[in-house]
View 1 (tube, one colour):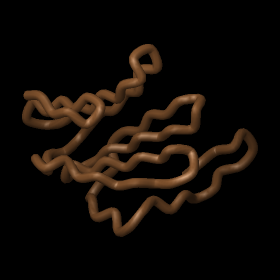
View 2 (tube, rainbow, N blue to C red; view 1 turned 60 degrees about the vertical axis):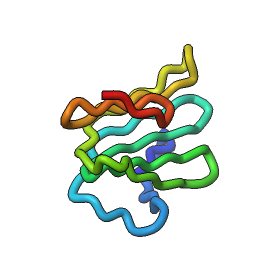
View 3 (tube, rainbow, N blue to C red; view 1 turned 180 degrees about the vertical axis):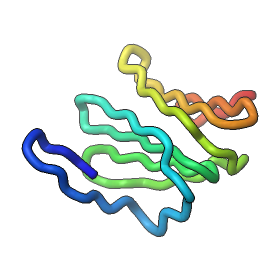
Length: 90
């Protein structure tokens, strides 16, 4: 759902999103939005279009944070998974 300051409206992400749960969302003033969830699901909105990725480890991703100071996105998940701007470290 998206809130424009007055009303809520549904948002349709790309392709079939087959996850049991979406767990976390973050965004910035530039209109970017990141959403993560179970099965390694990563959804990204650039202000105009949605894109979908799948972390190859397929673990539940539980938190996401956009760091405006470094223009990087951090994602954390089960089994010690840490992703930064698409690069995985464990």
